[in-house]
Length: 402
Image (cartoon, rainbow, N blue to C red; front, side):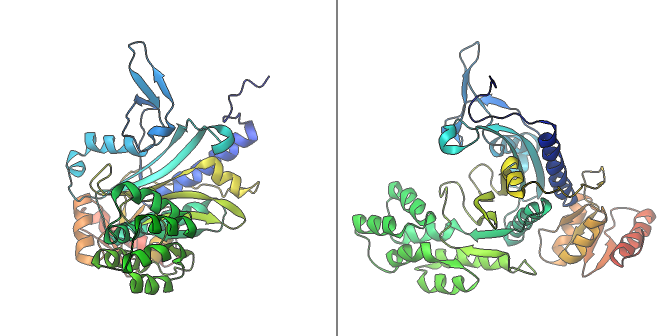
């Protein structure tokens, strides 16, 4: 007898070694962008308001208190922020970057939903909400897929667009979730049936019916604007345009204006990552301002699924990263930042889009160097040694030995 519970598995040495290599590669990637590791308990009091309440494994302790095994890291991370950075949890705008990895448990029927126990890996960017922050998370989602040797395809949407359509059409709140789910599934027949049942008419109703088909390149935004019934819908499209503008090459991004899953949780840009010849999403996430924290966005993945998509190929080896949790450089120059990260330098991406805002952010965070237009310069957070180090960093950018 294997002794296995349905939905769990053993990992022999070769499988466990591959899992460790994949996890090391992802940790290296996130550390190079300035994301600090955090941990949380695997056991907590059962919370009926938890986003994954329906998937929780419930237990009773000796005192008859109802507990639950961890089904998702994000709520625990929000509590950690409230304990360690109460001002940010109360609404202060200050970027905090976290990464996590650990076992989660889902009380699903294994024949319907696969594994009940798996390794969840993810990142969260807390305390800031703008297009640059959204783009940073999507950049890292794309690089996470690449880190395991896969070709990424990222589908990006903004549920705020669908939400605006539903509000403009005056869809009752109790029906919004079902219609959004049908839009997300691209089921036009269900959408049409719901519109007919509610007697919806007008431009907003027409836009709702067309939403499942708003998929493809940047040209989709033109059609979405033509259909948009009000300023709220156009504002959601403005945010997507701002995110696309943060990419030197957006060819790996596909727009999906019908991306409307978990409408009550996600409040802004959301995304899913795929790779060719693998039919299930590898990771997913987005912006959830005001759901658990005032300003927050992130993504998570099941490590085992990502490794399964990667097949039996070798995992690229992980290098050695600086032990410091504080980034050495704050960057407004993405190509130059990639060069420094590849050389082992920890580089955070400025959440401000202008040089003055980036300089203030660096000063507040104690980051000694600012990278703008291919030039590294001290921020004043150190003395002579920092000035000398900037020359070494500049040499790395020029392809010389540091």
